[in-house]
Image (cartoon, rainbow, N blue to C red; front, side, top):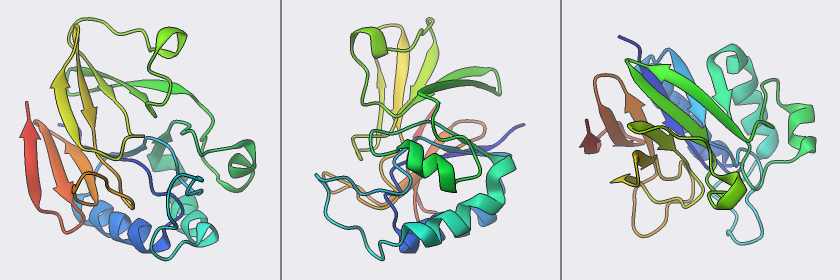
Length: 179
């Protein structure tokens, strides 16, 4: 059985990136899926704890062959110049344990930006910084929340997908699950 880790919205925080990567080492997933907003905090967010994009680059680049990433609204061509894995794809698709998972950052989920989804697909997005799992028209929307800037009282978090989806805080505690 494959195991993947899904995380989003690091926003240049070396502190939280390190904590996420500690969980990555402990979880031992086959793949790390990053749903965008890797280096920059954006003008709407306060600076995250230990904002140090160069340190985040140094932590993530050695994992380049284990990372699948999509572009967030704060990711730019300049970020691609310093990251050794592709951060410029708007959407992606992967198959894990019989599930089709379409990945996108989530800031373009209207009109032409909506990915092609089939009945029963999962759509994994970040962007809102709020963990979610909800049935929508023909697909299931999941959001891991934010690694560094959680909102609405949620935990700094990520998802592990193995036999089911597990939402975990950065201490590894499960706080939500879904089939």
